Image (cartoon, rainbow, N blue to C red; front, side):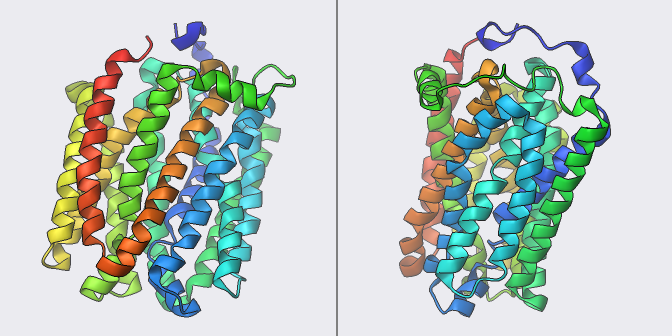
Length: 405
């Protein structure tokens, strides 16, 4: 019996055709590229528009704000009309908005275009997680979500590596056009899959049609203590982690004089660490349990950030970035799994609220750190993250005792 009295998912929903899942993963892949590809481009875009790195980081904040705000739109829509369909349509729209980013001629135009791109890219990953929540019982879900994580992290790795490399050779605008093409391919392929394969809409994938009051639904969820715990945990986790991670590329450029290509490659190692977690998630979960994963992830992230701040040469950075990727998803994947079960009867909305808190925290973290980066560099930002993240991990580990059965 799942949380909230929902009946168990029938076994046939576990035999979804591989092609259906891979296309959903492709949409998540394209969204992941879009989320992180601009990190290594930040110094280049700042130079092109003749603004500071802190000012240029507004495009990162605008993307994540757009990404977070529209969660409250796409989650309920996905619950009502089908998560797979909504992911397909928004992938096409995200591709269009991302192509516009490559055509902008001022920092303000780029910030607006990135907001639109983030708003449409928002549907892919949370609705994919909610779709898996519809199809896979909770007891089996964390390893499945961890494997699905490889699509996300492959997008982050390729986005960061290719972002720096293509930016070096063809300019930052080319990066946006390529990302746009990936979005469009994913969306078109998913629409075709819906026509060819009814299994793309598994049982339980849509709520009963009807008009609902969105505000009332959100307030009803927020009245649940465990929902509030989950949203607070992911908000502060994202604020601390991504508020520091967004400036690693600029720090490598300023402190060690790396090329944009080298910056992208070094930062991509973070994704390799996350994939290492995805491949070993089942063993780690068996050995450490949820509480152990959360605590170990928080402590290892703190160690990595302190070492980054003190790194005497660039050769220290790749293994530390891999450690960050591994440690973050040890903690974050546990949060993700719990998020898919916050509201089984409105899973799209529940996961969307989780994603909203995630990207709101990221946006605020990047904005708070911007003046620090401009005046003092990345070192103080790393140290602040190293202090905050273990505190969050210890608190959430303690709160897991109070999670509903």
